[in-house]
Figure (spheres, rainbow, N blue to C red):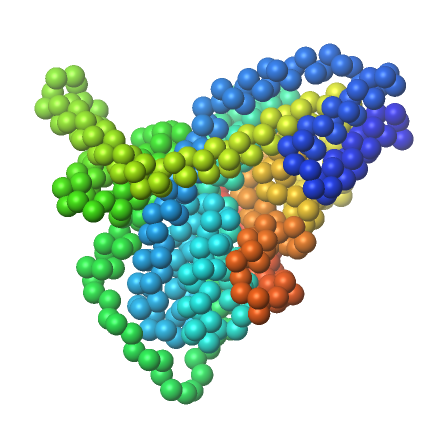
Amino acid sequence: MTGAEGFLLAMGLGLFAGILSGIPAMLAIAGVPLVTALIGAAAGVFDLNFLNFFPARVWGVMSNRLLMAVPLFVLMGVLLERAQLAERMLGVLARMTGGSPRGMALGVLAFSTLIAASTGIIGATVVMLVLIGLPAMRGAGIDKRLAAGLICASGTLGQVIPPSIVLVLLGDQIGNVYLEAQQAAGNFAPDAVSVGDLFAGALIPGLMLVAFYAAYVALRLRPEPGPAPAPRAPVGAGEIVFTFLPPVLLILAVLGSILAGVATTTEAAGLGAVGAALLAAHAAEPQRAGRWLIAAAGLAALALVGLGMAGLGRATPGSPAALVALGAALLIALGTLWASGRLWRAGVLGGAMVDTVRISGMVFGIVVAASLLSLVFRGFGGDHLVAQWMGSLPGGTLGAVALVMALIFLLGFILEAVEIIYIVVPLLGPPILGTDISPVWFAILIAMNLQTSFLTPPFGFALFYFRSVAPADITTLDTYRGVVPFVLLQLAALGVLIAWPALATWLPDLIFR
């Protein structure tokens, strides 16, 4: 073992020790490499000139327009969570299913899928499901372990089902690493990888995972002979439409604008944040005139997005179409200002902004810290060492992919998804992305694998969130035993995706190529 390899090993061990010590992950990810670099420079095996590139990397992160979508998507999720739309949706679903165990469990899963596409914030989703869905499921007679596992697993669907913050971060990393790796391999004109590719690629695998969950729940909760559950109040068609249509339209507008090429990811995230503010304000506005103004602004926004998706968005200045678009934009602006004022007076907007800054600050802190880790890793020659090591693995590229997937799964026991993305992809991704495998397929494999990190003890964050609000009669062991089948289902879905890469590549190729 050379001196540089010894320092790389020491840095890796120190990094895990720092994260497990309980100090903030950002400090561990940045501090350990910096100390290792200084000691290595004193030993003559590290050139401190590598650190001169760090300010430019930080500037690149902070000026990255794609990463601007992260706080906007976070704000969208926080506003929808604070608007209490979820409580109404789950209440309607409970009445629609009639209170049967199977119907209630499948209703919670359907609700979680919709919320995952709306918010994508694990903590808020899991806590909300515990407070709202757990009493309803236990009241229907569902075993506490199954209920705990279903809530923890379905609460993490927002990491796979777009629009997902994890997919935005993965799109940034995979796109940059793929471009560098292809150029290093001699391909100077590779096809760019965008977040839109990942959103389209994750749709089918994400829905496949939901289908796996639904099949397991349906088989586990077979109807038993006995008295029928007590009838519940009927649900009218109007109540169903006005409960579920607004969030569904918001999701379709955000995803559709990206997949149709009408808006960039950041622009679509801004649309989502505005739409979430309109929905939250409409639910909280006591005055009929204010509700009509907010509803008109939302319909105008949907109309403009729909015209753009239909290819009718271009208009010459001064034409009737341009004047109509200008009027719609003014209506949207007026409705958004009214909604923001209403939410501010209700105390919703201020709290949502604080949560957005806190969550976004954590994400960007890890991103900046991981850029320093990657820089020091390369300074010690770690990139060449990894390339040689992976090139000697049996099975070639597929063997290297299998190794990375196994490593990500194991890291999921102790690290968070954002940390894994910004540690593993820059360090281990180049040897794989320099080959001819699909970067979209590789990214979706990582995303589905990362979802298990929220469910695997001892540091699965979904388990922490569940235990923080779960009743005392559901023990930690009950929760662990409840999530085991769902972790196995996630691994089965990952295996299916490995066997059939077209599940992740067919839709992006159809839409964008």
